[in-house]
Amino acid sequence: MSSLYFLGIGGTAMASVAVALSHAGHAISGSDTQLYPPMSSYLDDHNIRYFNGFSAENLLHASPDAVVVGNAISRGNPELEYALNHHIELVSMPELVRQHLIDKNTSLVVTGTHGKTTTTSLLAWLLEYGGLKPGFLVGGIPENFSIGCRASGRSEEGFFVSEGDEYDTAFFDKRSKFMLYRPDIAIINNIEFDHADIFNSLEDIKRSFRLFVNLIPENGSLFVNGDDPIATEIASRAFCKVERFGLTTESEWRASKIVIESGHSSFDISYNGTTLGNISVPLFGNYNIMNAVAAVAAATRTGLPFESIKQGMALFQRPKRRMEIVGTFPGNITLIEDFAHHPTAVRVTLEAIAQRYAGRRVVTCFEPRSNTTTRNIFQQELSECFGSAAVVVIGKVHRPDRYPPEESLNTSLLKKTLQKKGKTVFLAGQNPGSYPDDMVTFLQGQVIEGDVVVILSNGSFSNLKNLLSESFQKNS
Image (cartoon, rainbow, N blue to C red; front, top):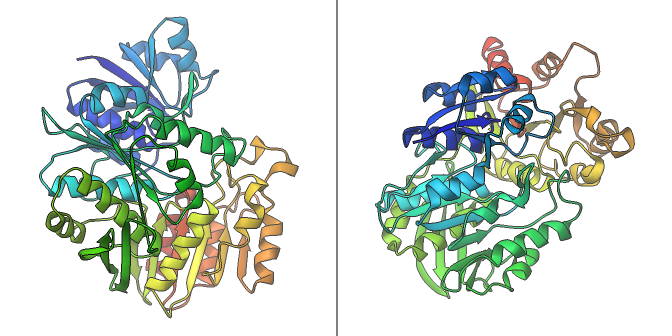
């Protein structure tokens, strides 16, 4: 077995793959900056040695056979420069996954702008419940497994389920990650513009998805969101069998008679017009119903009987940071954390929460953190996605120095636009040194009995989750 050093080990996928390969017998170490839970805890729990901060000394001490380069790492990083100067082998994380984890297994790849983590977790769990012992790579920590990646449990005719990210692979490989996962069975949940730091337009993203679809073999399968015209257009060029999933009668796989109660959703699922049965799953929101239908369709393609799929669905547990209920506090205040950061994801998440907690006020804390939402590309869309929230707290723009003012998100304008829509809006970070406590102070004066407080960020949001938890508990 080899010695592998993960440069950028704090990334969700990087940490998960590192742990999986450690369990497979490889010697693993790595480094990163700004490591925070759940990934720092995950590495600690699995005894993975890592350095906080980047230094050539780290690599000198680790002396690895190869360096796994995360896609957030670029030239100028002292450890990368050391590896290049000393001719240490460089490998990307997706290439490592293909070589050591997917290998000869049947490869199931879940793609799309939204819903990948939940759908991948669902699909992996359905295969696990059905006895197929799949390997998997999830961009989060699925609660049914408590790990984000593992190898297949079958020596022959195994399965591996991957969350297929369209983001690029590494500084030396600009292909989308999903291009390296050799798909046999694939899902496209939806396609929208995102990742403005690597894609110039929606057409660029569509091109990447077309290349991915072109990799699916003739005897493979592609399941595509039948309610998304862009996704269906991309799927139309596939050489394999294509089936649609959705809520409309045109889709081969269809959910109908949706009922939401007590945090669960139930719905009838049909295939080519024939009702297979009723599914119950502890998720809510139409977009999660779509995720569930996609997972059912792909799981069926592996040969699992519907009854097993139905039973497994009822026992599914959401991944961490996907509508995760942090806690319920005195005064019936519910705190929820979600990874949503794209305007569409924000909108559908808040709509689902408002539906689930009907009659209760929704208070939202949003951090403009991604490479797309920190720019003004979605200035208009962000002003329209908080319709289900009564109160909106806008966090500081993450790393505002990356873009000139004329290209950056104008949070002051966003505040004014939302206020015109009748929202109570707080723009955080206006006084130097007050952040993030200013958000906590504001919410202490705003949150009332019965409120549902939602934290939306694809990062740590300056530890806001823990700060609010402590505040709500103290002010009981």
